[in-house]
Length: 225
Image 1 (cartoon, rainbow, N blue to C red):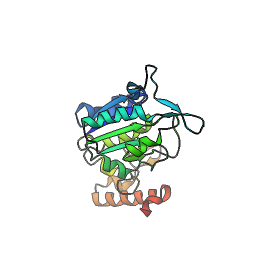
Image 2 (image 1 turned 180 degrees about the vertical axis):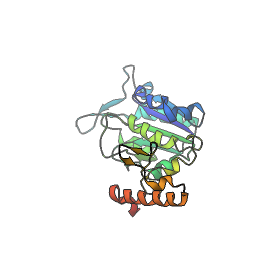
Image 3 (image 1 turned 90 degrees about the vertical axis):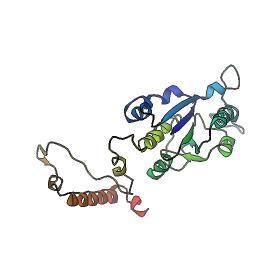
Image 4 (image 1 turned 120 degrees about the vertical axis):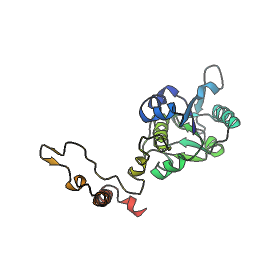
């Protein structure tokens, strides 16, 4: 998989890709991630990439011209399965979306900034819009990092245990059940006996029931799906 990220602040987004699972995925060539500074496509020597909005109003808007230059160049070099815009007014990222995107070959992500981007960018280039929640960040860089983490960990071979991602919360519209490790008892707090029984059928049944109870309590809407 190849992921290209277009951003006003590449230095802000690079750090999450330099550690842990994502770094190992990059080092092992499961995924290649490239950052493109929008200011490299600025309109003038002053690095202009934004302007005031027509009709008045507070906040600067990213202009279509530098974005067009950048995205058109990238599209001339390869075909993208999705061109994604990170924006708070889009459908919220969920596990199904992450699963689907993890199967793609080339993804381009545009991060918003300031007051947003010229609507014509969204109309002309964007095939999918994604939010990470109903709130506003200073820019879309952190949101893009969240999306990439959710996608990359699902690529076969990235996680040490191939079944690990399949047992995550939301994969089967259930939250993950409680998990325990050693010691068996700590200050009177005990691990459920069923997990110590060695009866894997009973353990699987217990985990399913606990996941169901947890989902009903915390996110009942998942069961409607």
